[in-house]
Length: 133
Image 1 (cartoon, helix red, strand yellow):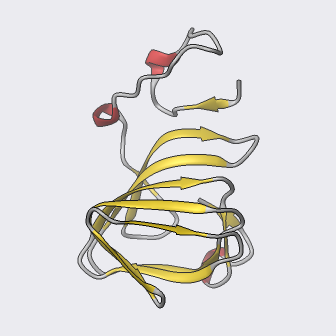
Image 2 (cartoon, rainbow, N blue to C red):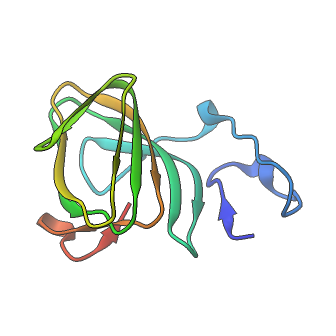
């Protein structure tokens, strides 16, 4: 099995077909390449690009222009995220099809859970041309 939860040693020694219960509070927040956005990886599979993670956005943070290589899904737990197409408020959900390009921001901060089938491809800024989650 290639899927795993980083920084979760309680999963060591489990059989491939055992359930993985995740103590989310014990997972560390890790910085992303975008200042003002931290993440807790709940599950990732490096072989496929699959990723489920919590993202914590500081107020005023902006994610550079990027393209979704596959479907991306986001549920807003707190605050809101905004782009040129609309705003997802607390308790709402947005999904983006393969090929969607946008610049995301959080004017007042946010906590979201996002699901990726493949990493984003950044089109502007320091990470242009690179695939990053």
